[in-house]
Length: 179
Image (tube, rainbow, N blue to C red):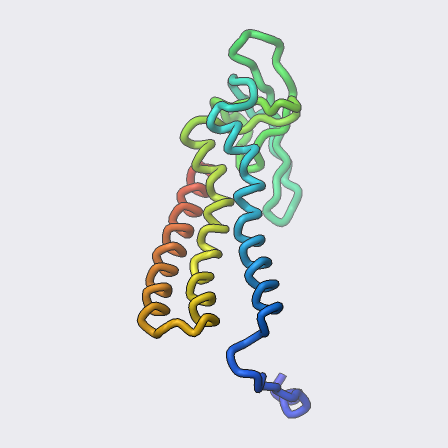
């Protein structure tokens, strides 16, 4: 690698404080979009886990096939609490064959997801990543606005707290999903 370094030219921007107003707006929109998207994608699972949608019942995981690279395809049988017939469904890939747990059948009827506290915590793991990602956006905005150093330091401290909360919630959600 060091043999190629003399051939590379390193360019330092000469404009000062970063991109212009249009570039800043684009960066902020992309940043916010990337951090909000996980929360939007988690809404269906949160609705299932909190009981707002789906059919309550019991999921029995029948098999899990190893797809390689740490990926699994799990199949199960969902028995509704209402006493209807059992339905073959896809189970969460973090399941193990033989697991029996409280779950909810999606309105489409093809998948069952854990409900209750375990389901809510597992569904919150994805939005927590977005929460952690947005932690330092206030600092960047203050920096671009030319705010005083004290305000930026406060934004850094708040960003650290937000990132720590996001990381903690992500870990708690992952532990809930895999336990």
